[in-house]
Image 1 (cartoon, rainbow, N blue to C red):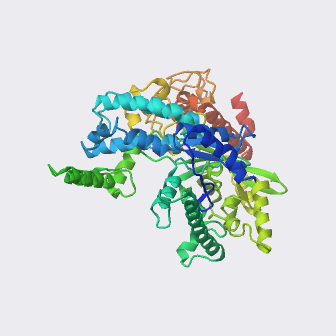
Image 2 (cartoon, rainbow, N blue to C red):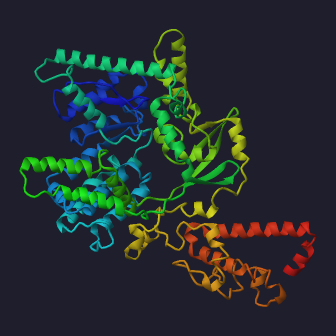
Length: 631
């Protein structure tokens, strides 16, 4: 049984010589032996238990895990997950029922190879990237539709084998979707650090079996135990040296110092700077005094020219077709082909680029509007809390926070578990013991919900103009309370008309996709009301509709919309002249996008414009004449 330290390295929690693989043996280890060996509070802080899909092992793990609901369990806050790699690789890609069928499709062309690899990556999206159960439900509808669709003419690659497509649909339903509660990350609370496989256990087993100081089946239990203890002591000594070096020194290169957060571990510093580097991809809007909207500026989807990477990959793919060779040579060539044209890190850059854009083309990725709030903790302390799962899952700041703070990462951006001193001073005598006790109190007593703010940062954030940002409010509200797909010109945009109506609502029609205020109010491209393109689903004339002849009963009636025009000479400067078409277009858009909160957007904008015009009238002493004209 292994865990992860604050440098994301594995450490041994328990080794056991199993007398049997029956459920009683696993249950004894998890419910009796484990709490006996670790009688303190450590097991209460365990967040995730990952095991193979062995039925007896899983059952024993479930008896020990409380999922935050049953405090009487050995690990009251832990969730149980089964290894996602075993589920996808062993039960699908390498399984006898699928291996030959998948290999035939992958060997039929570079496009079809990328198609299979992209579908595989789509499965990993459910495990690692979809954040809520609702997102998983919506994405699963798209996946099942994709696998069941007969017409594949608009896809990058094709799967012509009907038997394979039927088997894939059955596997997704029976072996994947039905196991969602033990696979999908959306079902696990707490700090999981993104772990979803038993890879550290597999690596540990390889070291134990293949190391010169490892164990072998011919050795007795006593000698085996001594060797395991020696391996652990060597590993702990190496880690202690690394921790001490990092805690008492700084990187030699200036570039490394610029990307290192003092007093935080190397692993945490690297992750923080990754989040910091993504801050420019975000837009923000100051909603109220202590509340902000933050959202990633969605990419444009499948628009990159793929001719070059496709050509390079196709040429390399064809070079492996050398005719008749021996079985051993064919196996070597297939292994090399999968290495260079596959999903591993060793794949050539051109295939990585090709696969990335195929993934963007077919995998549904959702627009997400984050809510970031300034929270008062009492005693003059404030922190910045984001609705995204990064702080909850990893215990450090997210890119949304850096989009607002626009500063480099600091020690306040991560929980105490990521402090290098937490490991360095742990259990040491003297002054170090006092520091260790202080770290432990911070770990157990201080539950930070977000990033700690300085008083200057609070003043800076609150000083940003309310109702303003680097993107309009409509950009953020369009994805609140609904599921909109990111990007445009994806596969789902091309087949929108084929989808069921509940799935069509997830795909903005191209006329309004990623629309901005300057596009709506572009006077050069919109000369008159008749030139305005109607958004799909817009009612031509309704309560909010604005046609060439707007109904006088409209909720958003303005003086120039009255059936009797009192002063035709003002037509060139009033709303009935140069600005009427702008209002008509806004009203049409608002009428067709009601489900996205358009009514509130238009009403607030009109009220704001009216108040500013009133103030302007007061400034020039024309308030009275304006009120008479209104009357």
